[in-house]
Length: 384
Ligand code: GLA
Image 1: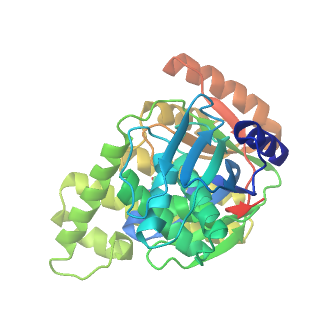
Image 2: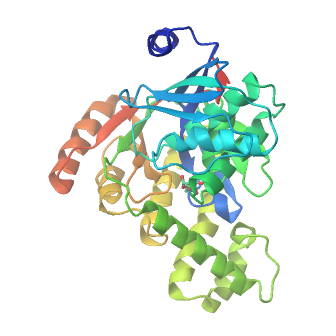
């Protein structure tokens, strides 16, 4: 892949790149809609992701190209005052990163940039966070900006929140910045303390099933869920002083849930018990109990389907057609939901039968085919 990127860079710009960087995509194994509620999540970085080849220039311009959009070139001048979001969508991610450092007072100079992503588009595997991390990492290296990896993670989240305008939590950027080969990250989203737990499968294969559904309403529904969680916390905090929903003991919630509207009760129930499922998952993985972990994955989907209501018929078809299929250890949606991808742990000798089954029933019920990929768990953002 490195040779291909190098060659493509020379073809596009006529000179070799100075450096090449890579940031992965991510999946979340368990702990969904938890990061913005201050609890525990368990994501990992993937082998696929975004490549960025860069060369410093003397022309005081940032020139953006992407092998994914071969017909377009975008140029913006080096500008010490900062930038505003542009109409053309994809360059806003790198431009937001440049904007961040520019406003912080960093001295940047012209660059030729060439991006290439092999993350399925719109699949909810965080291609946007991957572009942000590869860009902040590259700028930090090229201009000696002195940030550590966790700082780059936080900067990338700020770019997404403030420049791109999507109100996401910290999980995606953290997983992409800090991933480790064959390990899941257990991240406390309140303190940003983290540990790694080995995620090495013997009898099972981890698959990604892309619904291939267009994720149109995802952002507005996502914001709605966040607002409901905040409103529920405020109600409890009229008499208590909880930092976030994940700090609320299950016993307290059960004794006081009547204070909330029925809808809020459902949402908070998911959050509190999902956070406990992450703790139980950590324990199961440490004991090498993949069956238990699979059960927790499936319980997570059920809760996201029935209580948090962020799944939809595409993801639920995958779940319902998988959960009792022979050889499936666990299955759940991953990421924000409303389309995007599901993940499944399937016994190695049942993978072919499983793929055939899901492709057939999904296409029959939904009207178009899903895409199914095998996944490897890789390292975080780096120079290659
Ligand atoms: C999206 C957001 C994350 C997280 C997940 C749900 O991927 O970007 O911050 O909230 O949804 O777990």
